[in-house]
Image 1 (cartoon, rainbow, N blue to C red):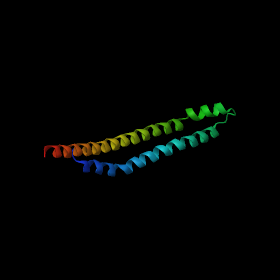
Image 2: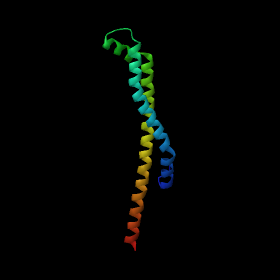
Image 3: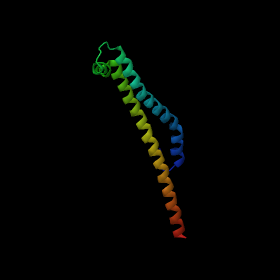
Image 4: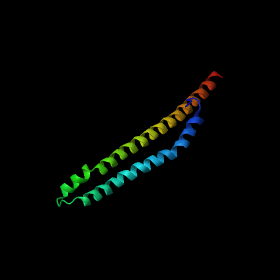
Length: 109
């Protein structure tokens, strides 16, 4: 992305805002579904003790796969978030540089 062109930075933000929203939605969904998955797996366990059912759920391959999915979702969301923050920073840098240039122009007159 060209640091001198704020329009490209704005275009980037607009083009990726939806991707960020989808990534965040996926992450939140997986965080909430994790609780349901734990309950489903605990219900499958035939042991009567709650701690044994919880241990079964937490160690189950389906629960571990869900955690891997959550990890991937967080990674995607964070990457998009920081890319958007960087684009916004580029816009602010351009804005500051433009203001500085205007001040220099006034001083030179």
